[in-house]
Length: 376
Image (tube, rainbow, N blue to C red; front, top):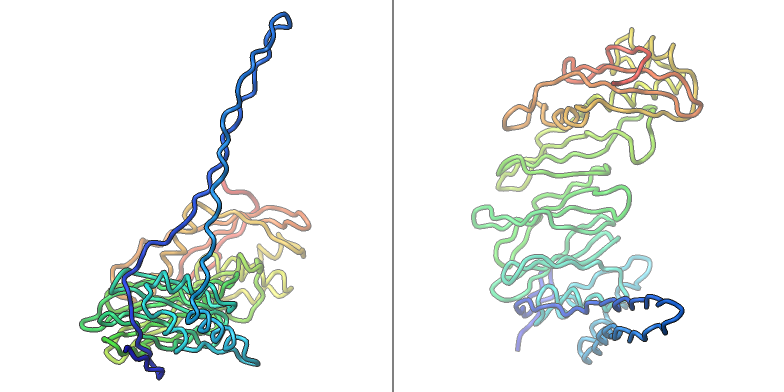
């Protein structure tokens, strides 16, 4: 008889993935309308095209007694107050004898908000479980058996970004997704050796809209939005600047933070300059604009509520390149810096239109010229 060890890890039987049955809805064919004949000739009777009924969706089969009891236990754990918990032992038993996708299907029968997800095939299968709690779970396969371990999800849920081999160790690198407009809020990396798992990275730095990319075999660059306290001219959630950067380097002991900075690209400088004008203290834009540009902008733009802007064609390319101009990053240098221009005007109330030119000076971008006009 197979035994399940409900400690930090739980081992249960694993089967290969099976196909997921699905019903494909078919629309009834249109019935052609009969063309009226002249009044002197009776209109021919055109038989209607046969209408086939849409297939009836398959009835969800009832759960067997063992599975039903486990689902009831799972629902009871999720209803725990004040803090719901994810019972690893129960989830492990539900996975027993099922593929990753079958496990996701059976977990969907629970009333719990689990957001289970399946990845991989056969021996590489992975399942993540848990949403909007402090801790979730990850399952993987070792020698034909499921293993399960707790993993922090920081009140979001996990999405697998990559599954790679580091020598004898397998690495699962997850994004912690917020489930809302904040986007990704952090990352977790798990190192797996057989039945053992250890966390090699857990970062949730209080940022939003985060994105991770592998620069090479040992370096991961994470970017996101974590702005300093200051007035921003374009301050809706969609349009605040991003550009905060964290460089993580792999070591045998796990990931180590190699550096952190705020990238000051042209868009960052634009929003900071407009925010300084909105605040009534344009001089606070001295880190993102030359004095002559500050004076010209303050003279052109009066008080108002909203801004509208249009960027030159190279703006996005230069903003993305700025992320890679950080001197601690490995690899080749990005494209050369070139001036970026923005056409800016008050939207409410309507006001004059100006072109603001930004140039890269030192390690950031500055507004160097402001004049009335529009982009071509």
